[in-house]
Image (cartoon, helix red, strand yellow):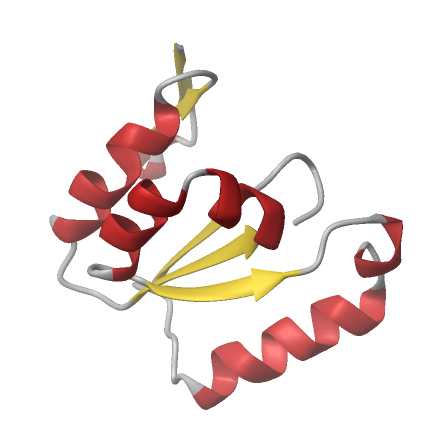
Length: 102
């Protein structure tokens, strides 16, 4: 796993990429006091069912079908509409989980 810092002056944050990153997700989101949402590839959720269950305890999971057909503005529009209905705000965490689909 690789840890990187996204340097944005006073808004910098760390990200983890690679094998083992999924294990860190639920504990990190549990620390937050704001709403947490995870847009996730359905195949990833199925393959990592136990980890996905732990994630569902701390974040709302929005499953998305895999494949090129979901990589479009229509899907972005649906997600933004869902986020608005959930009343996400600037402090909310939105996590993308999947092999490039989300």
